[in-house]
Image (cartoon, one colour):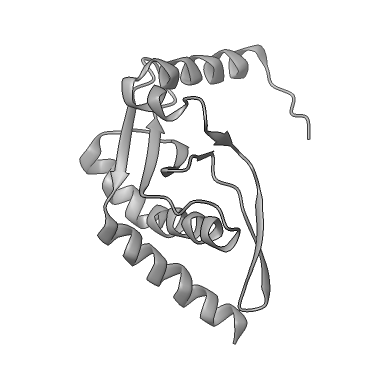
Length: 145
């Protein structure tokens, strides 16, 4: 699928990407051995599923989000409201269902869409991913009933 961008939109997206690549932790997540935006097709309870994490590595799953602010206190609240823990847990289940390595860590890279394009990397706790698994499973149960 092609998208047409204005020069200003392209410049902004390029600057955001450069900021992510310049961040020491985010840059480590973009290293060799990572797979980017690769769709995994799988089944759960007889229902066909599809998952496309932004970054997948044998050790971790990562997702990239643009956010008005990446300040940790504010973004943590937003992440909970947006159910990002459920999304990351869903990606972990997709890895297991497709016989890929079980992620040990789950990360979210937040980048602000205005200069200086601040980047913050968040690592989700095991407890958060466990809550995310409960969340997506409860939604799935409603779906298949």
